[in-house]
Structures are given as C-alpha cells and as structure tokens.
Image (cartoon, rainbow, N blue to C red; front, side, top):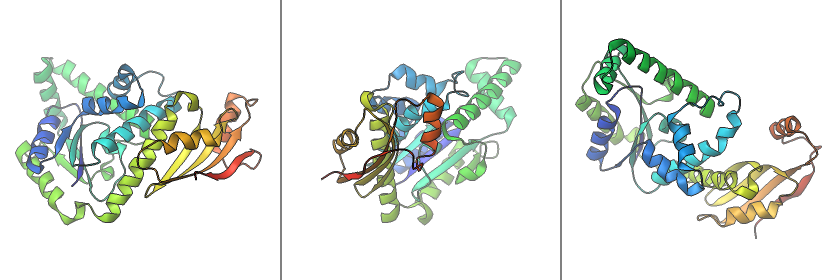
Length: 296
C-alpha cells in the first residue's frame, strides 16, 4: 500500500493521470474537494477551507500563524484518508501534507510552458495572451501559498521522488512509470514506515483537535506520538489547565497514555511578548504548570 501524491501546475492532465494510476493499483483517487470535505470534521467552515486551498488571501504574508490550524486540520484529514488503504492525491498541497515515509511516493507533473499554455487556452477558451497570464499567475499564487503554509517551494525537484515531463511522454507512459515505481521494493510499506505514519497521523489528530477546540484556541503545543503514547509540550494561557488539555486528548481514538509538559503564559504579557515566549519555550522564567503531568 502506498500514498501517492501528484503535483501539477496550471495544466489539465493531473486528474486524468491520477485516476488512471489509482485504477491500475486499486487505490482511491483523492482531490482537493475530497480533502476539504474530510477536514470539516474539525469544525472549520467549508468556505474558509476552500479559500485557503484554492485562493491566496492577501493577509497570508503578514499573518502566517493564522494558517496553522487550517494546515494542521488538512494534514490530519489527509492521514485519515490514507489510513486504511492506498490513495493517489492530485492537487497542489498533498506532497507537503505528509513527510517522506518509505511508502510515500511524491510525483511532480510538469510540461513545457508552451504546452501548459495551450492546455489552459483550450480548456478555458482563452486567447494566447490570457492563457499565458493565467498560467503565470497560478504558478505565482501557488508558490506563495505553499511558502506561506509550509515554507516550501514546489519547484524544488528534490522534494519529489519522480519528475514526469508530459512534453516528453504520454499520460499512458507516465502512468506506467508511476505504477512501476509503486511496485518497486523502495516504496513498499514496512513495519517501520507503517508505525512512523501511524505516529504522525495520531500526532496530527491531537494537534488538530487542540488547535480547533474553542476553549483551547490559545494553546500552542508540539505533539509527539509513539505507539499510542502521546507527549505534549508547549504553552497554555493561565486560564487553561494541563488536565483540560489531557482530557481533550484522551477522548481521541488510539490514545493509550498522555504526558504533558506545559508552561503557563501570564495573561499580563502583551501580544509581542507572548509570541516571543512561545518561540522560547525553554525560558526558565515561565512558571511550569504541573510539570510532567500524565494521564492515569
């Protein structure tokens, strides 16, 4: 079983290729609409998720932190979609939603700019100049979006396992290459990669639950999971107790044991000070709230 992500620019072949690969492997084909629907379980309005996935809000450059809960929810939902069976995701977020585990195959789908412009011109009934402008703007917007959400550049070929140039091959040949890679020993799930994925998925589920819980919206934590054991470290406002955080986590499926090391942020601190302290969680000035508290 693999998780395959296919990133495409402003062209029209990604869905066709993903569907043919998924059919050949017996996997599910997932696009951004499916991902958005799966993310709704965390209480984010669909309009907000669609805006983040499909558009480029002008406030991203200044308020990148505001994207964290949505990015985390998308990552948690992506893991849910891939938990029990193989998937092929096509779009412009999937390759950054999950780390590079052994059974994850990341594909960059590209083509000469002239070919991409012609695809857009035919698909959207645009003239040559308008189609070129569209391709350029989409690439710029997606570059800024991925940089804002993940600090990553989609044009960096080293982030992918396979780069497929449709200017040099047909979609059918591209499908054969991806399917062959999926069958190769290099991309088979191992007990180690399976456990690493499950630990990551559980950690993202915990982070999404905490980030989007109304009463815990200002809790900022890092989460590590290991076989159902969860360790949470970070900062909480003084009106939130460690027990509240643990209780939220314990309600999630797959949790065996929770340990928390949380620092209390005094409410008298200003916004800039809180952000600075959040970046320096080891600062001994911050009072520790029931350091090392664990669930029973």
